[in-house]
Image 1: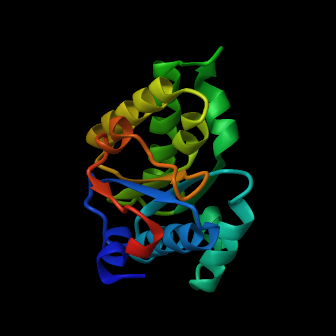
Image 2: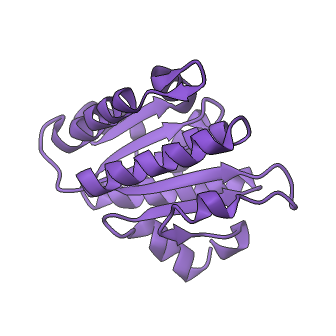
Length: 190
């Protein structure tokens, strides 16, 4: 992992919106673990909206980073959510219910900020919902990214979005990358 990518993940701008397109599952797990563990160590609230497929591997990577995810979940500092379930909670017949999205995210962020034994000044979020939506509906994905930007502005959170690429020729469209403040182009950049 190069220093620039590691620094960006470990210390994201308080209102940073990072995109990380990837083809290597191991490297994306490493990136998410760095992003989350650095936030926990800094006393930030951390919300992980992970695909069901990635839950166990990311939890294992956190453990390798010295983070007991179960213990931090009990304190309220870490919140883990299944991305497929979260996406289903605000999608109605293929359309984003924007009010429901905002309400769901406000609740999660407030839980990460004020839940548990102490309040936290900052929250960082990792999300995989956009990656799941991209292959089905590019316009809905772009709208979801715009809604994320509203959440970032309102709550002053840092957000890491990952996009799984199907092969080495697959790219995330400019329409989507332009909605982010930082772009980790490829695995070799991290």
